[in-house]
Length: 352
Image (cartoon, rainbow, N blue to C red; front, side, top):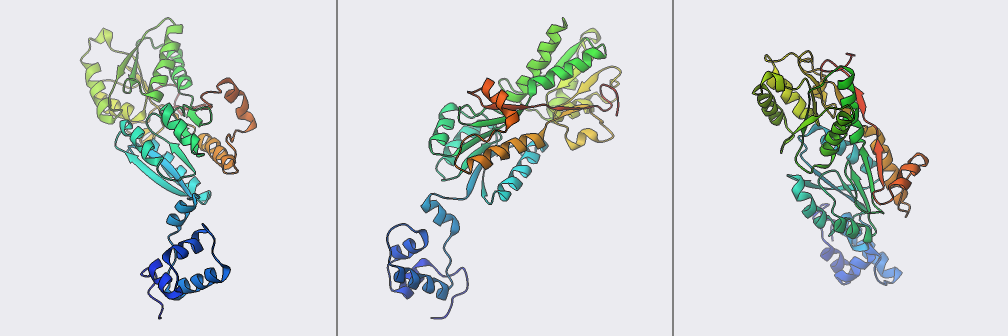
């Protein structure tokens, strides 16, 4: 029989040429079940003759050794998450594994995608969006997979979570405003119950209370530039005496929209100082020059990779020596906090 064009032959062709059953062809390539050495050799030669190669993914799914890592993400139009995904995909490639990407239109869909991810024999699951429910976390761990949550809790003692120290970022923002003598404080927050934005707002509010001040919080269902512009309109509608002189936006998208909405109406930072969070590329553009916080992505990825590397050797953990004190103090959460970096530009603090 002449060799077929690569990719058109099937296991049925191999079985016919080798004069064996298709089940024996499967055994020869998966290693499942007994097969005589001479039969295996005949099947391998037949496969080469017809130009058939088994599907690597299908074979590894049968053997339970699929080289997959499930990644749960959402809203890739959000630049920070796109940066995270880019780094994750590079790291997964360096592990000689393949990413199995699950995309949610919103955080509310993440739990459903985690349930779907459980049906795949992946090495582990990395979650970059939404909430990891305790029952989902337990199901992942019980299957022998690793679980990593980025900028959110893993909610399992054998899971691993690494996050920006969001409360510290909020406190640092409030501290900068207080040093500048600002007294009427406002936070542009995210949706009620959102994890990272809420922690940033709480840290800011606590620092304000310690200084004897109150920080108003305006929650936004969508942390977008449109939401930021709507907040600017709301501020401009307030009586002058009630308008804040310092605003902390819990992400840069809202901060940039807020700046656009105030343009031509208020002077920044003379009338209102502004700080964002994430250090998006646009934050450094000349029309904005936004003071903001840079999330420590390099450190977070280093710690995540260390955990996955150790798990790949059959261990759960992956902590380094400098992580031990924090993990011991939070054994349930296994949450590593990484300090954000203040990037001072034109909208608050001393300029670069």
